[in-house]
Structures are given as structure tokens and as C-alpha cells.
Image (cartoon, rainbow, N blue to C red):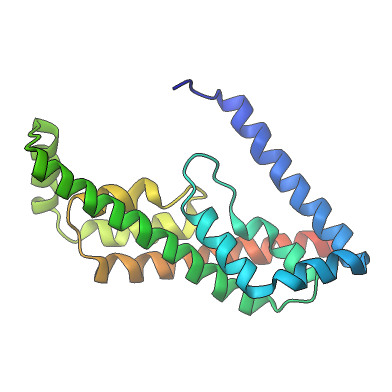
Length: 187
């Protein structure tokens, strides 16, 4: 698989964010766009959040479109809560992929020194990843699957990981959602 250079990735992110700003500005003055966004409503936001939350290849954060959703008349806090639920469902999917991967490795009998080292680290620091997950989900604008799939593979407990991801996702969405809406109001 060919790697995409950092410049292209940066340009893609810039264009996605620029498009979301343009869409929000246009939506605030175009009643047809407001009707279209409202038609898909909160269910559309929830589904979009699941997909964007579990999209490692083309990570387009759903929160980038918060200004568009708000400009169409949807409630900011409801959007944030629904996006957070959608992202957490995406994280849960990633977690189960990691768990299935672990089962596949056990079934096939693949044994590796890397796996041994990872499990040794897990045993040495059993609770540290839960706090790191919270910080990562709160402040790092990359898909959570970077962490959740390996943590699922290593057998960390979902009952501790999911609250950490949920809390981190809600903080991330509030920070970036509010910043996006405030930026649009300034323009």
C-alpha cells in the first residue's frame, strides 16, 4: 500500500475544514440547505459520527460540521451528545475488532515476541491506558481506533475503556464544536 505524503494529508484536512466553514456560512443564509440538514437531523448526525469515529483511513471528524448543523437550527448540546454517542459506538466497534483479532491469533497459534512484550507491558501497567485513553480522546484529533483496537487485542476491559472514551469524546466535541461555532460567528 502506498503511503500518502504528509503534505497531501495536510491539504485534505485543510480543504475539509474549509468546506465545513463554507457550508456553515452558506447554511446560515440558505433555507434550502437548512431544510436538507434538518431532514437528516439527529439520526443522520449519529450515523455520520459512527462512521467518522471508525474511519482510520480518511479521518474526517464529525465535529467539523457542528457549525453547519447549528446553522440549520439544530441544538448545539444535543448535537454534541449525539456525536459523542456515535463516536463511542465507533470506538466499541474498534474494540471488538481488537478482541476478535486476539481470538484469531490464539486460534491460529501465531506466537510472537512482540505479543509477549505487549502483554508484559499490560501486566506491568494494568491501569495506565485508561487514563491515557481519556487524554487521547479529549485532545488528540486522530481516530481513537489507533488505541482502542490494540487495547481490545490486549484484553483491556471495555467497561473501563468505554467510559474513558466517552468522557474524552464529549470533551473533544465540546472544545472543537464550540470553537467551530464561535469561528463562524466571528466571520
